Image 1 (cartoon, rainbow, N blue to C red):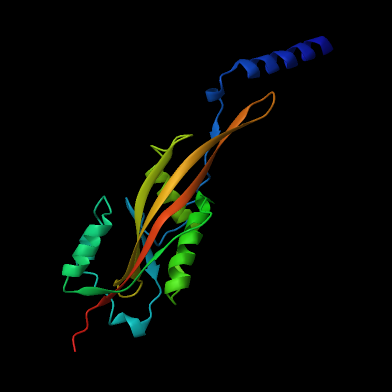
Image 2 (image 1 turned 180 degrees about the vertical axis):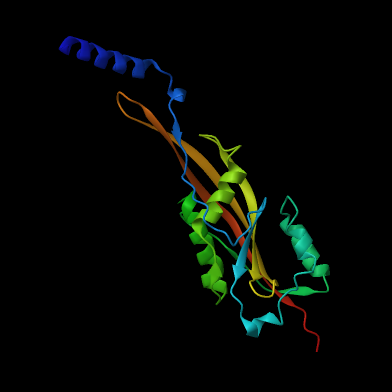
Length: 214
């Protein structure tokens, strides 16, 4: 009986060594989408801003060109600026670009970094968001083309909208580059995992107001 057990044990080890690496399941980031208030669109993130009544009368109305623009499939930042310049409904009252040093984050840390950059530095409003929301969007956008060893770059548009009035308050195009690294562990029973990391290549914040005529 003992010899049979030993024989089975070494047979299992031999099989594990002979099976190709791709036969082992790869771990993917676990996603729990518990965000019921926000919509996931193809390429933009809608952040519902808590209402500030002192600011309401100045922000861009929901029925302006922005409604159509954020439905487009590609974000062209130059085109966006041109549309704002020619619009009679709004003006950009604040613009800033931020650079990042030592910029290499696990994908689930991205939202915190973007949120810190936009809201803590430029706004005094609190917002509804959670990590799972961005995680779901990123994996949906990058999942099909981001394989182990590859790098992929996309631009997302963070749109800040007033919860109560539906008015748009700011736009923030964020260019994100993601990569996937495959790690193999285990001496006898190999197990492969994929680590997703990302860099924020550019972040430009546009604060929008209605043009108030004297």
